Length: 147
Image (cartoon, rainbow, N blue to C red; front, side, top):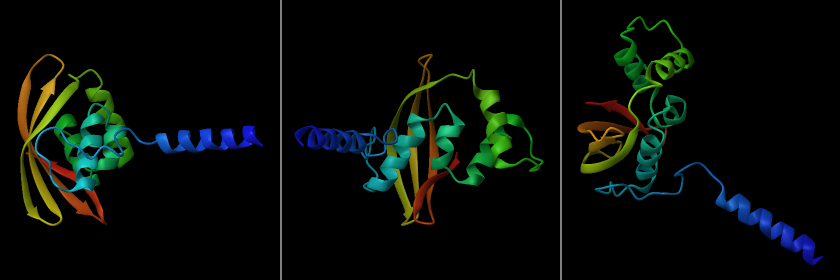
């Protein structure tokens, strides 16, 4: 009986500790958005930045199409999202890797639209700055654009 209880408790602990990378981390690097759900999406997007397969769940389809078009110069809109992701991955598989990010500024445009100004750090020591727009789509926050 004690072994059964111990086994059950171990399974419960393992199940509770497993989950998506960053899924419970609502603390961001830099300024806080004050929206815990958005913080989680931002963390997950940047933690998975180097693999479109992993970051695309945190993005709108329109953003996926946009980054595909930027990187491939294909504006035909004849490919499926799945095909776009595959081609984008191949184009970027040897690109510089993101090593860090810091949110410098948060602009709440509306209750469903937040823009963040971000400093990104790359594996070669370079830094750049850009803006990202996040939209609330069907109750979930998604990255929708980069300026």
